[in-house]
Length: 443
Ligand code: CMC
Image (cartoon, rainbow, N blue to C red):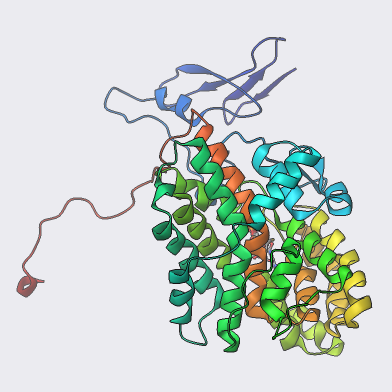
């Protein structure tokens, strides 16, 4: 196969051996043959393309990383055109049907499904690290009552780094394991503390006889009830939601975790940075924004007016669109089914009708079809959370709890990758040229 592009002067040669691309620098007439590996060229290979010895060399310019792979990863496979998502090779649909969140967490962190003994040990370990240090509980109590629980969670996770100074020893494999366990185990506790604080309720300590998801529900909702046991259908639905959020390759928050971790900061500082990134409404904060949008729309009759506002760019249809998926997000499909299971227990969330009608219209409307905008994971998840009695401010906290094993797995993979160094993008400087300082009175 040989393709030639005259304007870009790029040529791909496949002679059965190493694949290369030949680049002709039209400024100098020189040609360069660059190896292609896994469908990529190395940006550093462009540096040799220079006009003269003083030239720094060619760089790529890729704001928002639209077409740049920052790492090699074996954690999650995502084919956005076909709507495929796999963790460590296992289709998300199979994991959502047969697995548990902690088993998936093990899979992501360790690379393979656990044996029975490995799973039991892992669950035991996570269960016995659920308590949070008293200083962190006191810190949370000092936040104003209307503090957003994502802000509290971000601070609390960063605070864990002060409680576990041993976490700085990122080269110690045993230490990395311990911090991974602590992070996954304590996230629901910290999330629930934030919720209880918001509600002005005393905290409920972790209940180690319960499953991961049931314990979280107990820490959120138990009021003087030591025997609290959620409906198993609710417990399972929450577990599935956590599974669906567990990893999503190099998204904004995972990239933040990797980037901060690349400076050899401890994993609490790194995951705290990920929580900050997830907080934003274009990322994990979208689930909260969807509910607020459905509230504002109010009833099905007002949908055409809202869609018109989206098309006039006065609104975003929150929970729609994705940088990578140009097809139905497979997680959204599974969540739609989980809605039925939850609503069978809680009664149907009245906003479901608005969401379904929005989806129906959007999937037929040229504006959304031509831009390949489909529902993403956040479109229906909020409806379930709301039916469970969870307030919108907590939705992104649930996303963070689910995403923690993914952040941990990606952080560990980054540390083990000999090619990774401190993350440090280049820039194209477009500011002022050199100029002389003037004293303030002379400006
Ligand atoms: N509503 C209306 N128009 C949209 C939307 C939307 N939700 N999403 C994208 N578009 C339009 C956008 O205006 C652009 O149009 P044009 O080409 O005419 O300028 C086109 O579609 C391409 O969008 P983009 O903004 O260039 O795409 P992106 O890859 O930079 O952004 C996104 C991806 C998820 C930030 C964006 O789709 C969005 O803002 N969606 C709403 C927020 C949301 O639901 N976020 C959750 C993402 S999934 C959970 C997660 O992993 O975080």
